[in-house]
Image (cartoon, rainbow, N blue to C red; front, side, top):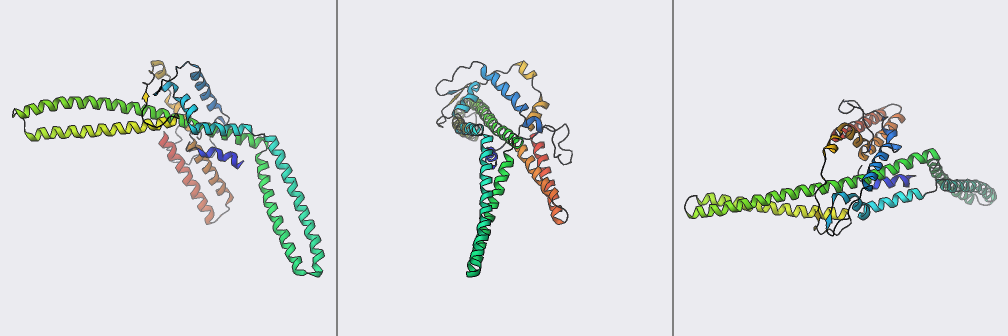
Length: 357
């Protein structure tokens, strides 16, 4: 099951549970039990999101032209062309391909085989010790040590198999599988959200570049006028030089902005599986209608964001581990150290929630 859980850690960063109103910033430690955990792990929040995505996907969208990318097709292009998304799809397929019952039966057989081996080792060691004891005491001691080491190794391997067997029990496996799928899907959503943010950023910078070019054109007209006025002796050379310097600085800033836009377009091209040459035309964003603005619910959106954050989810796992360490300590300085470690995890969690809010 460690391999199953490790599949979810390949995505950077990502979902804990919704907090009740006023939970953050109160100065108290976050509770160890969160009211939204069951809803998140059972897929209730994710199911609503998938239904909404399915509804949007059902709407007819024209394919993009060559060298063009539209916001309406962005999710589909990322899912079809991004290597990370395709890799995650294969990880999900790998999880779904596993036969839990067959894997459990295989581990039971291996566990029983090790039990038989341990019994045979003990029997063999006793027999060899009795045979060699009188004739060669040194050989008898060596055989007993060899048998002891081999038995200890088999016992450690058997203990690992027992842990895996516990993880493959129906109730344990269902919980682990559900959480693993949720974390992987959350990672996919973060990639899609990152692509959306990048798309919007590029459009915003392109608009800034257009405004800057218009300002440069206005500055050029002013500079032409000032050069004529300088020839007529109406302005000083210093005034003309200051204006020329302003134009040079403006042009340099616009050229830097063009390079930045090109680099961001290359990143977006990589996200959708295109060659990152920076040559990409982005269509305008879809028009936002009044009905959509009226449907925005900041409080509910914040709750959903907190529930679907993998960063918060992983921090909560760290808090649970710290709490277990604290409960395992009886007294003394180790108990105090564990208490401070748990407190630190709690305050880090609270700071992260406040930051997201």
